[in-house]
Length: 220
Image 1 (tube, one colour):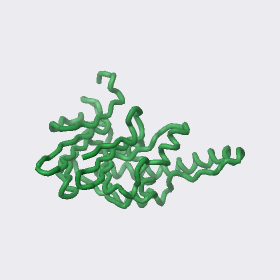
Image 2: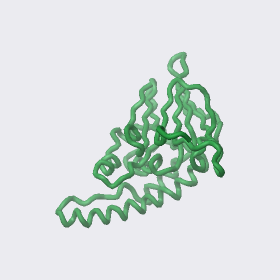
Image 3: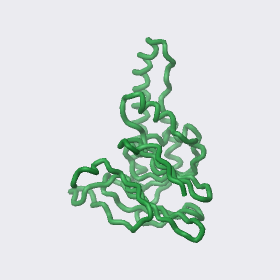
Image 4: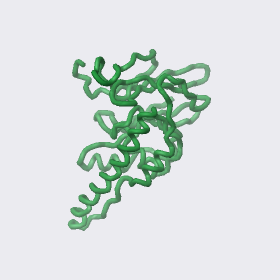
């Protein structure tokens, strides 16, 4: 198994972690938008670092734009596989991704006014509403604590991360020969004892853990 990081490494936005199994299955954990107004964010949002058409599956941890916001771009550039998420995440993504598409179009109009004055090449939006609709058609819901088999190599289940509605930690079991490798991805971790949301659930032991650390130096 190979793990590659294309976002949320040394930064806290643009979450994208690519798992490639021994048998060649390629699974993207989250597909987040790099948020920010600088040129680096614009470049990272337009260049994945891998071929979208080579990805077989996406597993979403939750609906926040820095974890789901590049899905329509992934689809526009050739991804045709399945996107797994919880029912609440799918409902939120439909609202948030359509809003994001509207923002992309307005932002590009503003940027292009300045680029036109400078004689620079005009930009296209990252994606539009049609790309969002195509993305929603690829989403398949998986409930918490359900052991879901992707193929003969990979299965996974969700536990509650207590971050927003539908937010999860993702727990993969990847078969390599006679060995089962257990990998967990925390997604964004909520606070215990919150008034509205359930506390993050404890989860099984794992061989590898990919953990967010936005508040890694804070005691919650």
